[in-house]
Image 1 (cartoon, rainbow, N blue to C red):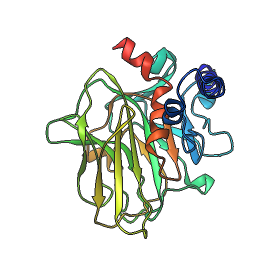
Image 2 (image 1 turned 90 degrees about the vertical axis):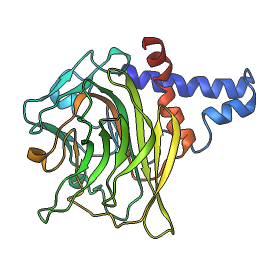
Image 3 (image 1 turned 45 degrees about the horizontal axis):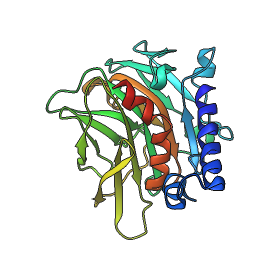
Length: 269
């Protein structure tokens, strides 16, 4: 609830600044441009806040039925572990423990041709091995061996993706024991060159061209572990503010999302 009020307050402040002319118009436009509504296209939003586990796993994107489910005992919901010292999901590096975002049940499954954006606040307690790419988000399998890593992190701290069966990477790294905001946006198929856009801490670091075909998987998204969990390492860290969109959101929107907590994180670190 505190995060909701913070978002409302931020939006109200931006409107006041624009109306009152306290800041120059170009600064207000940069911060809250017309395309910078963090709720536009939002299918799933998990803050992990609530008084019961059902409330903590509930989707805060109010008009969507997508829910999160815990598998295994290595994922815990902690009330003071997240961004701004609020609730978060803690992952202990157990490959048999993860969250599942049940998009299929709401007819919002991730499809091979779809545009989407996915992201979160992430703090790694331990980095993967030097040769490993650990899945932050992974397509669930469809029973036919389909499903690829959507967003990964490697031992170097680089964020990546394996959506087109080739390892693609962001150009910047994250640091262990520090909060970072990470987002990946992927163009829809059929529009010419298909690209993936990497964002770190509110800034687009780079974009890569996807040359291979994506697969549908089941449409659900696994959080914190590879779909072949027994053969791959899992996340050891804390996740908060998971967001999933059915569109490519622009750089201004990503910056607006980051700014909801970015100033507090910079002070803490």
